[in-house]
Length: 194
Image (tube, rainbow, N blue to C red):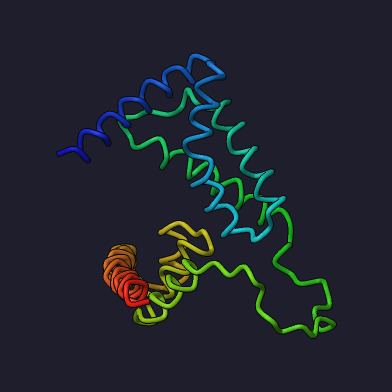
C-alpha cells in the first residue's frame, strides 16, 4: 500500500510539473530534467557509446520536450515514455544522418588487451543473464534495447509477426528478471559468507 501511495503521489507531482511546463515554467523543466535525465542519458549512451555525443543529444531531447510540451497528453501514457521516445528518436535521427556505424579508424594498432579497471559489474551480470536466453529472445532484446529499434522495426528485422515478436520480448524480460534475481541473491550470499 505504501508503494502504491508513493507512485500515485509521484504521478500527481509529474502531472503538476507537466502542466507548469506546458505553461512555459522553466523551473518545471529543471525539475523534470533532474528527475528523468539520468534514465534518458542511460538509454542514449547505450545507443551511441559516446559520452559527449550523448550529453548533446540529451540536451537536444530536453529542448524538444520544452518546445513540444503542449503535445504531451497524460491520458495517452506516462511522461517518461513520451520523453523516452523523443530521446530515442533524436539518437536514431543522428545515427541515420551520419555514418558513424562505419569504422574509419585503424584499431589494429592497439595492442593492449587488458580490460579497463572500471568495469560496470551490473552490465556484465545483465549480459550474463541475457546469454542464458534462447537465441530468438536474445536477438529481440538486442534489437529493441541495445540497437534502439521499435517493435515494428525489430519484428520486420527478425521476419516474424508483430504479435510473436512482442511475446518474445515479454518472455525474455520475464526470464531476465528471474535470472537477474538469482545472480543478485547469489552475490548477496557470497558477500555474507565473506
